[in-house]
Amino acid sequence: MNFLTIFLELTPGHVLLILAIFLLLFGGKKIPELMKGLGTGLKEFKNAAKEDSTPTKKEEETKE
Image (cartoon, rainbow, N blue to C red; front, side):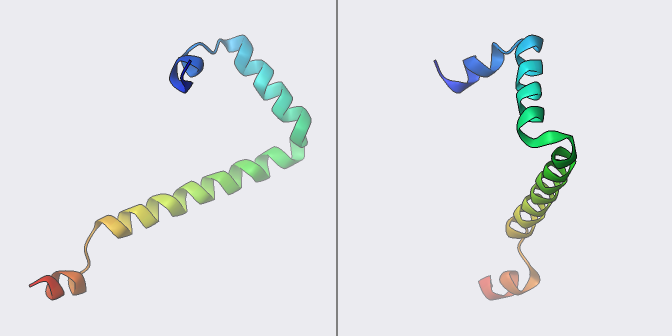
């Protein structure tokens, strides 16, 4: 089985079980900190991807 078929076969019961295990492992106080860090990381990644994809004026001038 590939990852996509496993992912699509998740039922609400499976999701609740995963969330309960996650809560037991990390505790209620640590989860918001983890999510904040994850959100910050994703935001930085998106900004870096945008900066790399758009050429700057210096790059355009050197190409010509």
